[in-house]
Picture 1 (cartoon, rainbow, N blue to C red):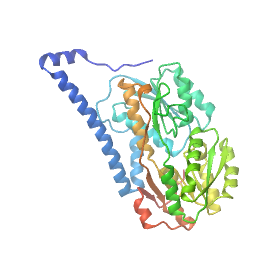
Picture 2 (cartoon, helix red, strand yellow):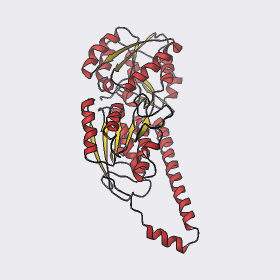
Picture 3 (tube, rainbow, N blue to C red):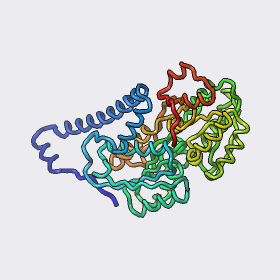
Picture 4 (cartoon, rainbow, N blue to C red):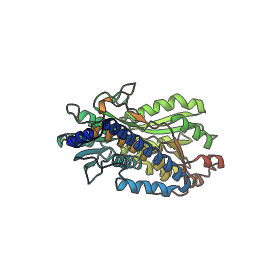
Length: 384
């Protein structure tokens, strides 16, 4: 099923007949509108960062509320009727933010749920079998586009749609190359593209050393079947010595393995560092509880993990990552670009998030200089 955007050829022809050079002017206007849209998106991002610094948690909640209503339409509603499938691998804050941001990004480009856009949202609950079933269902329903949130869902959607013309636009994929969704030059391996949430590993290690000057060993829990986690582990292994750390890791196969693996790891380390590993993040409250009882700090990889009790994170903002992905998807739905021709994109800058309550509970003092660098500081621990 492929819907087409309707274009009124007659009106364009009449306008061209009435005004010499109008076609060129029209193209220029369209170009200006696109540039304006892009500039508007940038301004919103910058304003969001400024507001987050000034108003703290409340701003982030407002952003999420906007996402629930699919955001404001920056331009005109795109003519036509479109159906997309959103395949989310697990239920946790960062992936939720990606989804909300994705819908906001689409809305900014004229695709609004309930108006010209039908959205079929499915969650795999961190189960690869479910992810494959969801992807196959979207293909059977002949959606116009699939949005895949997290690496396992991206792989499932791409594989399911390989013999069709249905594009997959992914987000929150740490290493698209390792996931075989892209080549080293960021060119897609097929009709698939999107955004990477590659972790700022060196910035994270520098921050941990700043907060824990006496720490020697960092522990990381990860899922052995998630290529995104394996890729991050390799990067940590190559950099920990530079900051005076050694690294201990523990692999798990399912969420049921997390409690015992956490117990084993906590006996060997001075702190835990959490990745964007979907299975492990789903069990983060359990990990935080166990670490708290041993007075061991846990560092997160993004804002949602800090909200619920990780002491700090040098990470990316997932609402903005989702918006960026939504804008890419809009280009594909409008017919302006093919997924197979679009390089995957990343957010290059990281932000520091702190939870002073978590630090206080552990008896750790955070310097005023570090607090001053934080984009957002939480003074309470919220339930997930």
